Length: 260
Length: 126
Image 1 (cartoon, one colour):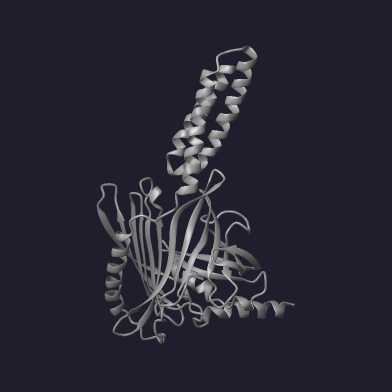
Image 2 (cartoon, one colour; image 1 turned 90 degrees about the horizontal axis):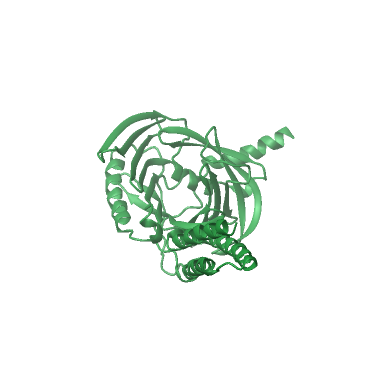
């Protein structure tokens, strides 16, 4: 029994070094983000996940972009224009550069991580606005563990896992650097489920997400879920989350340029 | 007792009306329902005591206006993203800036083979 369990874990974890068979260039996924207000799910923002390619003199990298923008009716109350980017190896999805540009109401923050996988460190640049509206920079060097990624590449990395080889209950941990601190995201494969989405009725892999030693994601085992289509593209079609200030969900609106 | 329900009814009806003109219009149903309930109780008490019903009629009028506004917004207003020019500009400048940073990085350790960009024409929403 112990050996079977070990093999199952090994198969699931071997996906960490797997080649990218899922994410291609030119893919665009659009989502609607809703937030629960007094029991009613209210559509607040549009979230997009795009891929592209960036050529340098040495290599061609996969450019992963995630944006969040509030709908017009919310702009005058609380305008959100967020941009998350990651430049990764197109074959292994290992990140080299990560950028996070946050514009939420009057709040502004910019984070940039330059990964050095040889030395297991990240050169971090944080740009913030102080109370007087003056922008200041903070540079630091953060030590990371081997295999630590940024949040964007982790999402794409989860999509690239060989979930079809996993059995319900299998868990994998991912080390993620966020706000200059390393945290661990646990992903548990719950099973398959058929759900109705804007793309039609889809059979999906149901994954439960949790954060180790952090209070960002609240709730029990079924409060933070991610549904990926059970096909070669593993498109995230639905996600629901519970945070300290409430709960919400992400629903797919459209998917174009899929690899498979 | 009647006055308490009239005051509560007014508060709920005004709240429903205010919420119905904001983006939070969806939740104006809650105070609207409360206003109807308070209004009905006040109406019942007024009928029994044969007191004037004018203020209660006003509660119902305000509630109906808020419900009509909310329903109209639910049916006809579609969620649209506003001005994204700023974000698009930020994306473009970020890519240029990123290219410069990536040029300075040691990227030799990984195999960077990538397929050509697929033909996007003909690909439809799935």
